[in-house]
Structure formats: C-alpha cells, structure tokens
Length: 612
Image (cartoon, rainbow, N blue to C red; front, side):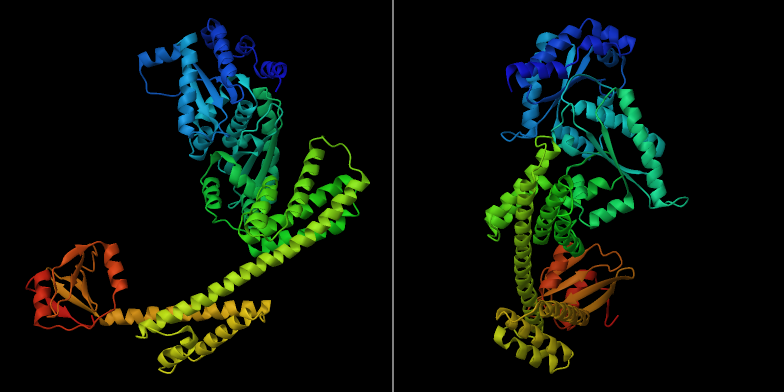
C-alpha cells in the first residue's frame, strides 16, 4: 500500500477523539478533556509501529473488580484503552508469546506518554476463545466502548452485541445460539463488510402455533431489532441476519449442508445454550459425518443443473455451472471421508487428496474448478462486468468435461473403498474364526484349512448351527470371486451382510462360552458379619472380590503347585478385570491347602458356597 493511501486509510478509520467525546456522559467528557491529545498520541504511536496488525483501538470501561475505595478512585483516574490485534497470520511464535511481546511494547508507549493510560492488548484468537468458553464480558465492554480507530471489527462486535442483548431480552427462552459468522470471524473485516449473524430458535416445544409461524414471527421482529441496533449504535454496515429453527438446523446438519458445516466450523458464539459449541467440537473431531443419502444427493445435483443451464440467461447460467461442478466435488471429498469444505478450500483439497496423494485425478481438472470459482467471484465483486457467449460456451464445455471426469473419479473412490471394505470384512471373519478355535483348544490352523477346522471343532460337535458353516463357505467363495474380479456390486453387498451376521453370532457364542466357563470357575465365601466374597479360579491365579455388595476391594494371588495360594495382593479394579480377561478359567478344587489359604484371606469363620 502506498504511503499516501495508507495515511488516507488511517484518517478514515480514525475518528477524532474530540468529536467522539460529544456522545459521552459529562463526567467522562471531563475526565478525557485534558488527556484527549495524549490518547491521540498513544494511538498514533501504536499505529506507526503495528498498523497492519491493529484491527481497532477503543476507549473501554474498566473490568469489573472487587470493591474498595482506593481501587475505585484509582479506576476513576485511569483511562482504559483496548487495542485489538489480528494474530491470524502469526506463525513464528505462540499466541501467548505474541501477546506478551505486543503488550510489553504497547504498555511502554503508554508509560512514555502518560501512566494514566492503561492499554489492554487483546489478540483476536483470544477474543474468539473467550466466546467459545462462554465468557462474554469483553463483548459487553466493546459494546460500551468508544472506538478511536477501527477497521470494522469493533463496529461489527458492537452492533452484534447490542442486537443480541435486545433479542435475548425479549426472546431468551427461545434462543439456542447467537453466532457471528462470515469474513469477520476470519479476521478479514473491513469498514464495508456485511455483519453476518446466525440465530437458532428452539421450536421443539411449540404448542400454540406451527413451527413456520414461530420462525416467521420471530424473524420479522429480530430483523426489525437489527435496524434498531444500527440506529442506536450509528453503525451503517448491513446486519445480515439469518434465522433458523432448531429442527431445520438439525436436518441441514444431517444432510451435510456445506453452509451449515462452514457455520459450525468458523462461527463464533456470542450466546449459546450448550448446543452450538458441542456440535462445533464434534465436527472438529470428525464425529458429524454426512449420510450416504446426502452424498448421493450432492452427486446427483450436478447433472441436473447442467441440463438446465443451457436454457438460462448468462447471469443465472454462471451460477448453475458454478454449483454444478462444485457440489459433485464436495460429494467426492465426502465419499472419501472429508466433511464438505468451504467452496474456496475445495480446489486445494481436491489437489492435495486426489491429485497428489491418491493419483486419481489430473491437475487440469482442478484448474477448471479454480477458474470457475474465480469467474463467479469476479462477477460477484464487480471486477468482471459481462460474460460473452463464447466465454459461457467455454465454461459449459469445461463443466461437462469436469463432471464426466468427476463421475469416473466417484467410481474410482467407490472401488477403492469397496476393496478396502471387502478385505476388512474378510479379515474380520478370519480373525473371529481363529479366536473361536483357540477357545476350543485349536491353536494352529492354516487359512486354507480354516473352513475344515471350523466344521470339525464347532459344527460337527453341535456347538454352532450348520447354517454358519454355509455362511463361512459363502464368504470365502465371495472373497475368491472378488480377487478374480468376478464379483458384482450386489454380490459385494451380500458379502458384507453375510460377514456381519457371521461375526455377530460367533462373537456372541464366544461371549456365552466364556461366561459359562467363568461361572463354573467361581465359588462364593461367606465371612465376617454376613459378608460374601466371590473367588474366581484361573489356570494360574485366583481373583477375589472381597465383598460383592460393596465391590471396593479386589485381590489377586498365584496358585501354587500344592494347590494353595501364594502371597495375596490388593489390585485396582482395572488390573483385576484385565487379569480375569487375559487368563483361561480353571477348575475349582477345594482341598486342605485351598481351604487354609481361604482362611488366611477371610479368617477362620468361613463358609464355602457352590452354585450360589
């Protein structure tokens, strides 16, 4: 930016403090009259050093603190100045280190000019983290502030906070979340930026009117409050208010609506009743995933839109072409396992995943997507005024090429996922069969002989019904057909079902068998004042729950060759359970040595109970 322009920009963004004082209470005007020039000097010094990073400078009320006359008198003398810093590009140092360094420099400026000036340096990420943690006090202070330099962020927070307060005062019982979104939350605020806010209304307990009526009624009043908030604050930026009812918001979330995903990912709550922030964390953890129906819907929209584009005017046409190739791109990423990204991020994700990592897509197709997004952006921002028929034809031609290639990419991804899932299903079946055979004493069995081992040890003995031998044979055959490229999509689906049924039954069989073995290896011992202990014998150890009612004391001992117990030690519940799970149940033999060992643990007055 040229020096002249920079100076002009600063003057536009920096209202004179004397003009601002006219709107302040008389006591505050008196307080600032003698120091206004010093505050101006402080502001100029900060901007000279850090102008590219300073988002706003404002006079703010002091933070609430404990009572005390001396502290109150001092507070009345101090002039608190908030300095909001954009740290979105900070990569060389931690956020904490950046704030500490900036604070030290900015505080030194204030001390040089006048110690009465008390700067409060606030980095943008810290401001947003306060909101995510439900600490909104700073928003209230900014709402009461007097900006003396502002690139747009302070104004946006001010009007949004005032509007939020009005909305909550009238409709708090219905408001689930009030969220700031758009370019502002990414630190790209300008004086002309629209201020995007989203409000989610709880419609789950509506009785006197329909959900649509509730939304329309509240929406009209809330938008009217937005106009009123603009008049109260004197902020001219458009407050762009989107109102959702909770049921619609939830449906959009389940349908993988990219707008909702972007709102959850980037939005900052100015108020939240405990839904938005957990959803945001779940999305970050990858626990909110699009359904298969949503993926199919995203994929199908492209072809439909391309058929319509030929019959539309150019301004509508370019919109359709844009979504015709963007939406299937997002569908491909979703099928791969990535949540639907922001449109601006989609080309780079396509490049990183499908071109560079998986080698499934050619670079030229990513460039088609990038060019399409650029054309739309240029038209939207007025950089490009018109589109010639030749340009529309070229965009349409490229979009058709792109969509055909993406459909093939979709098949490639499905094939890759299908192969991965077939191998995983087959390996799970083999692993379960091996575990089941181990439980029957069969330690070694080659994979080629797995079916025969299963038949001889589990089917022929009547332990598992014969239908599961047929299922196992069918799964092995389907895997072989898949390896020989003979398997259709219908057969693959059949294999998954057979594998799921087989694995579920065999695991349940092993669990039931294990339970029976454990029960037969247990005795109960009555001791003390009618206390009852449970004693479990394994091949190597004995595990004891000292009191089955309290279950707060767990013991373990080795079984000696003589039959008695070794030294008994107390263990944690976790180690107790791990030990029981890792050892094979043994036989219960109560001989003199065992009886003597039990008396050492519980005392002489004991009663041994079987099948209790």
